[in-house]
Length: 222
Image (cartoon, rainbow, N blue to C red; front, side, top):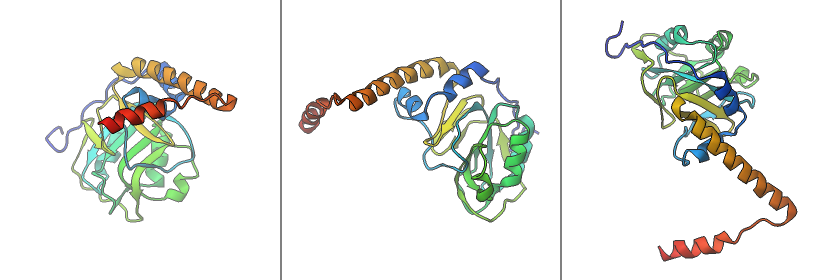
């Protein structure tokens, strides 16, 4: 079935393991800085033990509070994918809990990014498997549809396209096109070097703060 509201599109090609390994070595804050600090999720919380996330997006847009198409989307996921779920930010019904997240991990999915509610958080917080969500409720989901798989979605104010690279850590989640990966990585590494130098100068007592007065003057002049 591929009617409007029920589209089920094939998953995009996966990002290379080498690119994903490079991204996992870089903090999301560094990657964010390399993207002009204008992207990334807002309002999603990690519900797992500290861990890094990097994989290829398989996207789902579902009716708020309904997880029928999330179950179906598992059939489109391959080891190394991140399932990105647009549940409209609705918090009245949980879209999944321990059972579905455990199944996702068992088939090689490397993380879940959910703009909606989850439950069973005590169990999820005891595991390393990355789960980001909007919030929590004990109330379970419905299973009626509609929903669409591998279409553009929005999670936490961030647009995600099927096949985008998803990266996450304790600070949050970012998405960007595979074509931009090399540039994002290079810029993030440059920023990493600058930050390392700043930390060294703090330890040595030579940290330069002279820019503050000049910036104040420019800002006050409007």
